[in-house]
Amino acid sequence: MIDSYIQAGKIVSKIRSQASEMIKEGCLVLDLVEYVEGETLKQGAGIAFPCNVSINEIAAHYTSPANDKTVIHAGDLVKLDLGAEIDGCIADSAVTIMAEGNIDENYSQDEINLHEEIIEASAAGLEAAISTVRAGVEIGKIGAAVHEAIADYNLNPIFNLTGHSLEQYNLHAGISIPNYDNHDPMVLDEGQAIAIEPFATNGAGYVNDAPGHYIYSYIANKPFRMKTTQKVLNYIQNNNQYLPFSGRWITDKFGERRGKIALKQLSDAMALYPYAPLKEKKDYFVSQKEHTVIVEKEGCTVTTL
Image (cartoon, rainbow, N blue to C red):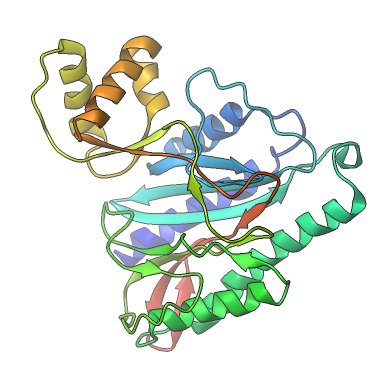
């Protein structure tokens, strides 16, 4: 299994690098997510979750719906979060890019400097966390390392977002890796795969649900009278039962109107779990940096460098 984690990590690293170059003024978010997902499949991997592209105060869980017209503007803080799986072994990685273009038309020099510091802070938090990881380390101490590194920039981590353990075909496998010292005494075991993802912000450090649902997870099989809804559920069971999927994939398959109606009915009946985008307060900014690591006796191997 370790070999599959390593292989998935190499694929994610390559695509992350390529996709980062697309993050420029005028780029459509839809083009970016479709590029990432398409390249993942071309590389022979499965898509571990829909490509997330979350901008400025949006911290996570935004992916394009069908016909999305969202455009990246120069100077935006664009968080690119992507995942691939080989034989169910997942690589999960994220990077924040300040979008290229005529940045000074949208932001002052002080704001540009702040954006750069926010990006540096989450990267410093990740580096600090990785240096702490080893078999036997308490999870709370990893969070303490993240918080201390981000606080050095006079910024906050996102306190109510965490990293997570990974298992075969299981993106969130039960263990949460905090971005502050939550005093969790649970320890990491040798051979565990975990995704560490510090978020840094100039806001208060808490996110709330934003409108809309663009990512879903399967929960349970339930009977439905409407044939289309039952057909959509059967399709999800056969194709997306274990890992999160995009509503766009469903509307592309079944049509926008029918797909949206089915997704709402399935969510309302708790056959699916809908993920809302997560956002800081307006006019604040969030960065994210993430790697997947395999815990070792005296450290860890980063699979997504």
